[in-house]
Length: 294
Picture 1 (cartoon, rainbow, N blue to C red):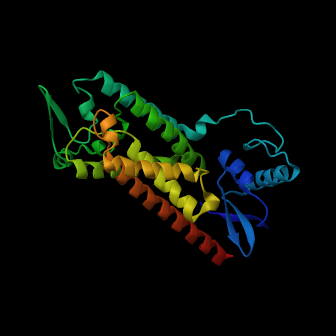
Picture 2 (cartoon, rainbow, N blue to C red):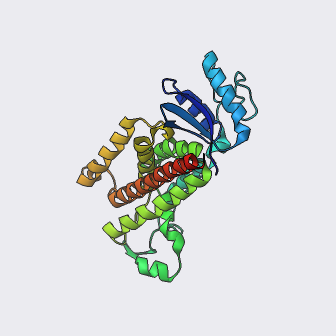
Picture 3 (tube, helix red, strand yellow):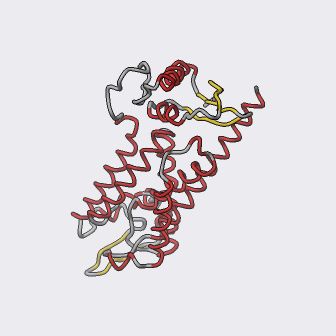
């Protein structure tokens, strides 16, 4: 994607509403600071007119709804929500719900064992697991990811679903479906691997490791490149980090049936932080390259 400088404006002008309107319309747009001015960057000349309409609407005090491609600044949005703009988030929610339903119905693990990190067999009242080496030898590579869709109980799926919708949707709207899929894939594998390393062969699952990956990714962008932040309140980030620490103390285990997958939380968070830092550094290098070309 080739970015170009579309507009320079004073630092005193609040461009947050403009940025939100462009992003909600799925128009790639970001803002940087240079020589005492705010610089608006676009990825397509076709969006320059929409940017001009959005800026004019803000100047006239009528920027109240997100703009969509092909609408004027004063035209109301036909739909309050763009379902196509967050289909990856919705798909993850559906797969998580189906995984939770499967765990609930398949008490003998006749089907669930195909989705666990390592294969599991039921013998009487005991569970027997293979190890990671066996998984790799059998080339069952899907197991590295699929445990994220397994959920244990209604509270588990509701809690994870809430945060999946809250954070996954923000990333998808601002970075696109492809980016969210890559982040989900990498943080899912990282969280499962660290959970396995910490607990050994066991029956674990859930989207929470991926959610901490989303958190780490958003956290780094909002900390080091706030002009391209995701609008996630700092209190939410603080709460999630505090919850991570509390879970590591073991206090939460006494209130649930089983144990919290602390390794998954930590693995996802570390992977998300790395991905966020990589994105921030890449973007800043891209800005420097564009400035040199100019």
